[in-house]
Amino acid sequence: MNTPTAMQPSRQTMLDKAALAFKDGQYKEALSLTGKLLMQGKVSVPLLDLHAQAAVKLGELEAALASITKSIQMAGATLERALFYGDVLLRLKRWQAAASVFEKIITEHENSVPAWLGLGHCFYSTEDVNRAVAAYRRVLAIEPEHEDAAAKLAECFLFMGHANRAAAVLTRPCTAHPNSARLAYFHGEALRQCSCEEKALEVLEPVRDDEVWGEKVERCMIMACLSLEKFDQAIALTEKNLAKKPDDVGLLGFKARLLVTEGKTESALELYEQVMEAQPDNYSVWSGYVKLRDKPLSEKQLARLQAHRQLLENKQQKRHLGNLYFALYWHYSLCGDTEKEMEALRLANDTMAELSPFDSEKHAEAVQTLRECYDRAALKTLKSPNPDFQGVFILCPPRSGSTLLEQALARHPLCWSGGEKPFAAEAWRAVAGNFGITANENLEKHQQADAAFVTEFAKAYLTSAREAGWQDGQWMVHKGIDNYKFAGLLKSAFPNAAFIELHRNPEDVAFGCYRQNFNSQPFSFTYDGCAMELAIFQNTMRWWQAQMPESIRKVRYEDLVEDFEGQIRGILKWLDLDWDQACLDFSRKSRVSTASVTQVRKGVTKQGVGRSQKYGDLLKPLREALARHGVKSEV
Image (cartoon, rainbow, N blue to C red; front, side, top):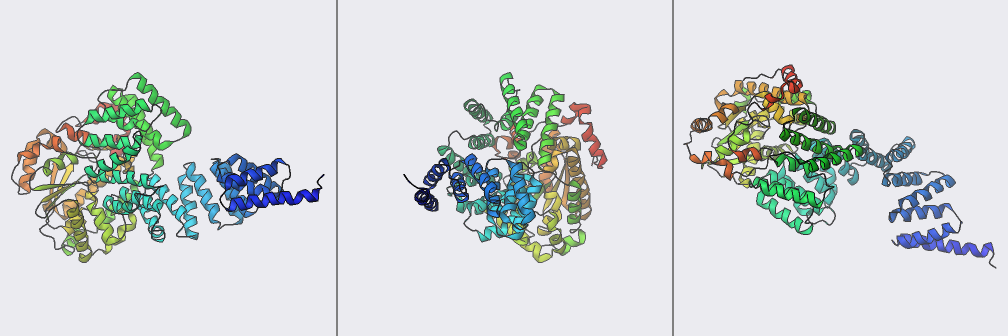
């Protein structure tokens, strides 16, 4: 019969063997040995700690939680055990319990990086993004090059629609971790959302083959190529990834978008329907699918959509939920049920506004400060030596008809389509070293700009344009939706540039913005935001008319669709260009990837004129917002 003293070395030997197995990465062996010892009833704190650690490595989280809980009960919560306990709760998605653990640790160890990081993860997982930002910022205040905190903080900013901040916060960590595909992915995504798609592709290209992040990287590259209208490259990347994952909904969605740019709407609809048939529980395709349709959903389809809506409401997955509400809006719009249509649209925008809050008043102040840096006197002082550049910049807010006008002018044999390519954003980054021409943090750079700065901006702008295909001697037609906010900078850089001030009925424009899911334009999620954006446009254009009236031609969208040929002839004459019949043949040949793609395919139509009138009093809050912000119906 063995004595207790003879048995003790045997248990210790098994524990030592388990510890060695864990150290060597043999977690299954470590878990088996510690489990046997626990079953024998001979419990010790080192045994419980080791069992918990091995269990976590193998994903046995409940077992890990039981062991670490008992260890703490027996020996107390050291910092290491408390952090481990919080991490297990975090992995188990018990967010509140985990947050409580990390908060308690922080009260005793205020500079504990793992505790702040864990707390940030808890907040982010419950979409408490503002508190997550504060936690991740605290980590970076302690360790400025912390890879995980930088990536998560950037992810928070992207979630909130603050791509400029995401790009800025990644600058130092990306330098410190040049081989981190994770940081490169978020940096590339931030750049893409900052309209610096070319730079995004540069950042993403070196890590596209990464085993963990490569797939996400290439998806980001596809979206960048779509924005840059590099359709052939987007198609190649999409087909490459579909060869690996032929049923991937996201990739099939990209393929559908590419089909739409080629005018193959029916093929795109068929593709969406194939996905919905193969994956009836997938909710990510609805928004794109319903928006393409010309008739309402069937009863069966609507029932499925409503079931997805209920599921997402229960799960509080707001971004996906917002997309579904927009899909419902398009369905009820096709039904002609204006009350249900507007209720779905309200829910969609309220959901997205909660995720992407936007301070329109602050933005209006920034735009005013920016434009006043380029008064008539400054335009003469800052003038760069680029008198031969022939540019036509369309100045207007979104949903004003700029794509229709730009595509028609670009069909002229002496013109080239700049679309919404981010030449200005890339040039600003090149000379200012950061992002966001209209961002508050860049106002000082505008105030300090001199002729040398503007000259470098112009050079960088033309370099980007040439790389995109523009050639010297061609008129460039560009319709960037923020062009009007920094038109003075463009005028300084290109003294002979021409500007088309495009107006449309403000109520139609505001409603046009409100009815689109404009992730990149968070002002569009509220009536006040839409009204304020139009007020900014009208006020800013009055300023530019006073500073450079000889360079601006006013065009009304309603006049354009009423007498399309006459208006285009007038603009071409103003530009000293001869008439060309090709300008009337844009809808069949155009490949665009913006929200206007379906309208461009339809050609010139009066369908959008006065669209908002049919809603009557349902749009009374929008009309009140326009009046409140002083938006004029006729300019």
